[in-house]
Image 1 (cartoon, rainbow, N blue to C red):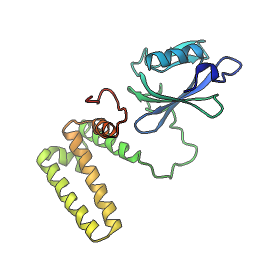
Image 2 (image 1 turned 90 degrees about the vertical axis):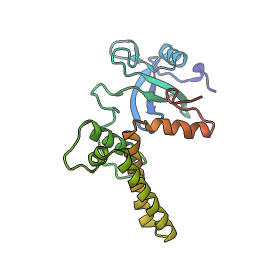
Image 3 (image 1 turned 60 degrees about the vertical axis):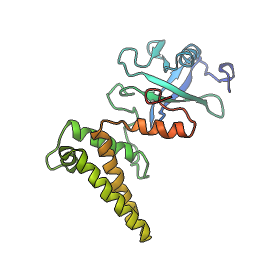
Image 4 (image 1 turned 180 degrees about the vertical axis):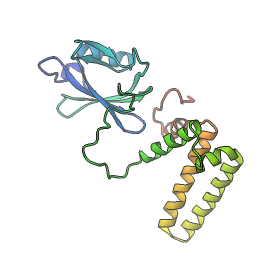
Length: 214
């Protein structure tokens, strides 16, 4: 475990600090810390930065309510930059965006598991803001029985694809299954975080305290 005195702060007594979503791995923001803000962050497990423009400590969420709950912290190999894994309340960016990093310089063509969270957000939005001719809204309107029936059908098709050794079809059927499972979770008002908490606790790893059953 590295100590604060071993960190390399710059000439102004500051060190860059990056906040990363502990669940999705998405980079949320980058700011600066001084020794005092870092000590407060480690003490309270809430991100506290140093504002270079105001020359004052800045506890993230103090006015907006968008707190960042620290679950892990790392220094880089040169001990001159910090990475914090956080559980974000609301949005990290002052613009209202979840992450500050949304101005694209190069198109992201690399597939990522983040697509799962994008689909979850789309399904959540369909429930709040129904869209005409939306299949997702059709499932919500039909309710639990219809959604469960579709999950059963997709599960059967997964088995058939696996037995047929058809990897392309298997990938398609698993995708359909995951989508319908996401719809079911939203219909039953079960946050995906609760599923992650169960998986993490089975592995003996810490999870978001608000979902932990221990």
